[in-house]
Image (cartoon, rainbow, N blue to C red; front, side, top):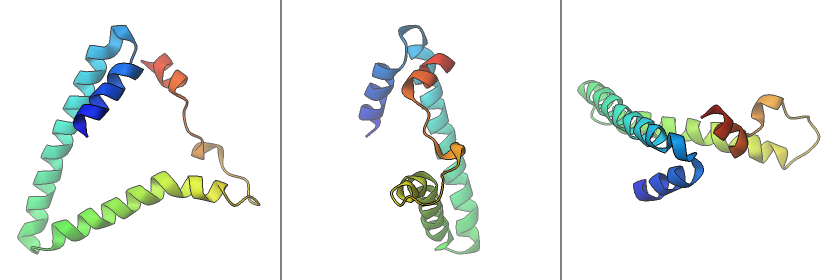
Length: 96
């Protein structure tokens, strides 16, 4: 999975920013692993099952945040807020 994401970043990032994008991606992954492991260790001290329950809740919340706006669009009738719109790849390239 990591190789596919690296390849995607290499294809999408502009030539002058590829190194910066790859470095930020790697740094964010390392920081996330560190914070996740530390938080899981603290939760494990309270109850051995707590890290697994919290990870499940986090996964469900992430699923809801990412996919529910798209599912709501399948059933018209109520206008969707503009904050639910997806940013185009061209706009991301402008930022970089």
